[in-house]
Image 1 (cartoon, one colour):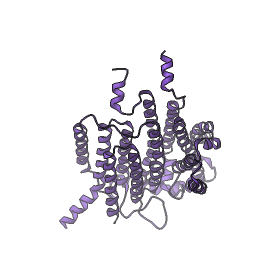
Image 2: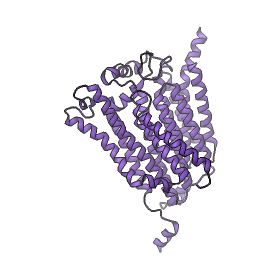
Image 3: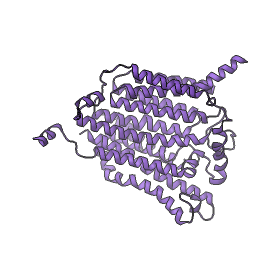
Image 4: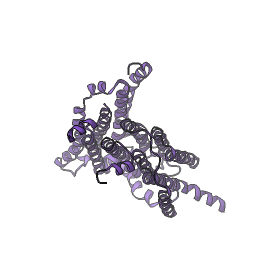
Length: 139
Length: 124
Length: 184
């Protein structure tokens, strides 16, 4: 898409703020609306916008499909790994209170943060990977 | 007073009835249309009607979003929100799977109309 | 006022749904689907489900629209005219609708606070979230902490769907002429 100057300039301006907003939604999820699912979808939408304007090949140069294929299971592993970690710390599966020995509520915050990071990784990379597969099929 | 009660009854039920209408519309599209992408859109409408079915009984008039703050005392029910939040993302994942199947069917049979796929099938 | 906003949004939603049923061009259907999702997101926010509204706006109007459009790009954009009569589907959906409307008679009215659903589990979460987890957004604390098992399952479902799409579409596309060569 060489000709679309306005689209290219506007999307270049927008994408950093989209990603920033996604990070805000992710890390402010404890205190306001948001969390891993929403942030993941927003991240994926930002990259899809980039791929729509600048082409799939440019996008795949930045994030290769092989990296996404690693990121999809990695998110699930982080999530389940937090559960296994709390087992080893003497709690139940996904019992975040164990993560901080001094103050269980800090452990809760830490656990939610880690788990949401896993959700973000899986959701964002799955959505982007699905888009890659559909868009790459057309040629 | 009698009339006011009836009005409140009707207004209080509108959410349920529109939900039922969306379910009917989704079901109608799925059953009547042979185009598979249209069927998937119908399935999405069916699915979103279920979001409505879950979230609307959790709303409390005069309440606010379930984010605890000193300024508010009444909050809507958070549990349906949690259930539907995950359902939306799983919904788009299953939609993508359905679309992938449609694309493969189109490559194999050259059509996304169910009738034509059936009549072109090897089993006929 | 809350009733009124709700009513207007619900009527818009039904109008868009009727349009989706009637339109035969699939591009128009997909775009109407995006409008439907935005209306649904607004409605969810009006019903205090801010997290859900945000997700629906990003997923329904953003990602699903892109996916549907890319699927349309790979297939066909017009729906063939109907071959069968519509009598049976209409009868089926009307029958289902009547049964469901009959079921709504026993449901609590919209906005009631003293229903079993709003007085037991939901209220319990609202009371316990701050003392037990110190997370003000109850949706997040229930999603990630109290119902962490559920969310782990959902994440696994998304993972599985991603794998499924990859298995179906990753391989090389077989063209019609290659198939002919295989047969000969």
